[in-house]
Picture (cartoon, rainbow, N blue to C red):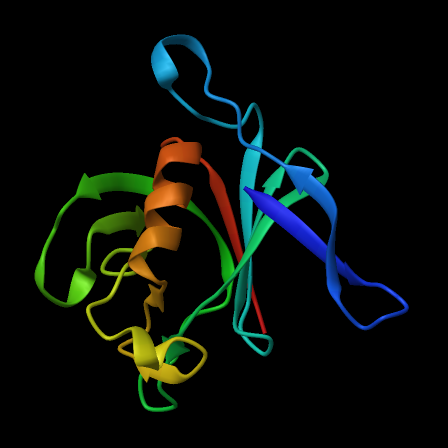
Length: 142
C-alpha cells in the first residue's frame, strides 16, 4: 500500500493519499506494463506501470570492487526462496550472474555492499516479485 504523508499546521503527520494494490483474478497481483528503473547514485529501485511510477524502494548496490553494471536488461528468471545471501526471492537478469534479490543483512540496504547484484529488503523484493513477469525491462543507471 502506498501511503503519502503530509504535515498539518500543527506539525502532525496526516495521510494525504492511499493507493492500495488490488488483487486480480484468483488473488493474483501484477502490473499491466511493468518496468524497473534502478538509479545507483540514489540507491533506489522504482517500479513503473507504463509511464506511471508505482512504488520506489531503497536498495544496496555493488561495492566499488564489484560494481553493479549499468545498462538495459530484463527479468530472465524468478525463483522463490533461493536461500542464503539471496534472501527470499531472486529476480535474475538477462546479464548472467546478476539479479535483484532479498537479503538476510537488511542493514546493508542503502550501501555499496554487494558483489554487483541489487539487494532489497525481503518484504520489498517479495512485493516486486509478485508484480513483475519474465521479460520485464530493467534499466540500471548511474
